Length: 85
Image (spheres, rainbow, N blue to C red):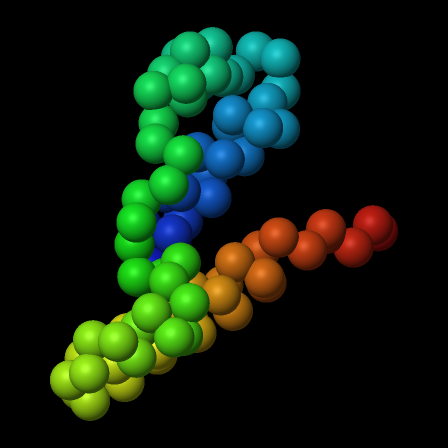
């Protein structure tokens, strides 16, 4: 997993789940900052396959489809609840 994906996942963990607990100082900082974060990035990972194909350049379409697929696999993998011990 790339560093930027790890960073994004950790940020979401801190904002949504309270980080490492009630004493985690990052929670107050990042929850205060979170309203300033964009709702959408416009990144190609969120484009539909039809939108990607509209680029027409085969190499660009192929690469963007692969990046989208990789993103969706990572998002799905990390959005599943962790199994309970």
